[in-house]
Image (cartoon, rainbow, N blue to C red; front, side, top):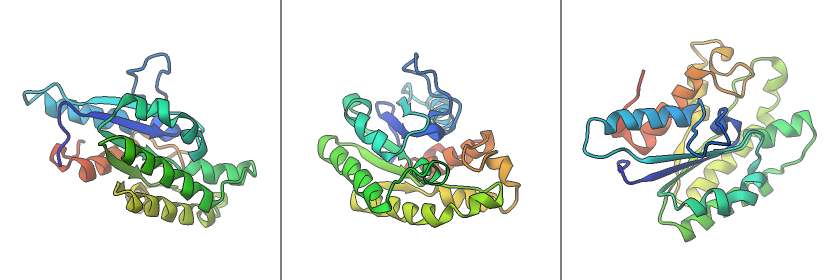
Length: 216
């Protein structure tokens, strides 16, 4: 199914989605994968009859899944999007290790599953979930997989339960790091570089709208 020029694409998540967007400008997309996706779709639209889809970024730095829950009605449902993309999970793991802030995987899964189910009930929207990922830049981050791997499995189950398409950012980044230093993809292991963002954007396009094609 292709993205149409009259679609509204809404992206919600943490700092990886936020990517420095200007909160004072509702049209700001930041400088990350959301911007890259929008650029690709705009370029394609320039060759056709329509203006291209509307793209909304509602990522907020530092968010965990419970933060999404508190703002879901306003930041997702209220915009009546036709495609909703959720990228969440790494902060639920990160805060466990750097702050001792608990986010049990079962509670995380219940919350995410509920958000997707609520959206499916209230909107005729396609659902897309991007898996969390980590490209460790130091030995201390290797231990995070003990929490992140089961959390990623929870994301996959919630997506399957609600008919959401899945963008396996964890696999994309995992393959890319075989040929590159981790810091080339995410300087701190978490926040993507421009290359990392482009890889996520291309992975999203390959799943959601293959006709758009990857961009260099």
